[in-house]
Image (cartoon, rainbow, N blue to C red; front, top):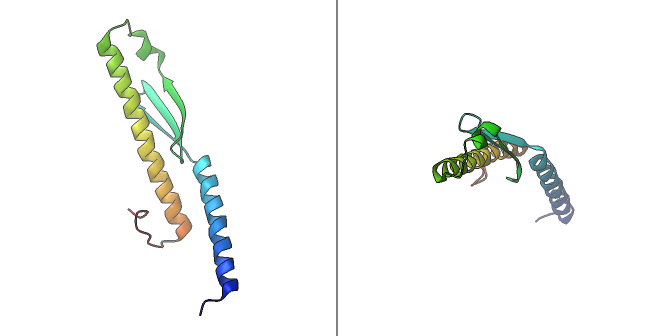
Length: 109
């Protein structure tokens, strides 16, 4: 038989763990670059894009040519996607640490 007091305690602990996880996700910051640093994306653990930096030299070459613009657009997409992968990796590592090795489908690599 399940002790209702223990169940309440477990639910409280789960809520605290969730709050802690949300805090960690907000505080986790990753950065990724593309094009040798021409474009740098900074993202948090919630996969929110915090900053996008474009090297002035990458923009200086844009004279209305579609090839240069397309290349810059591709670099932006690449940097943002790589930052997303790094954020996912950081979250997975953080969650695994918090769970103390507990195997949960979808969270463990």
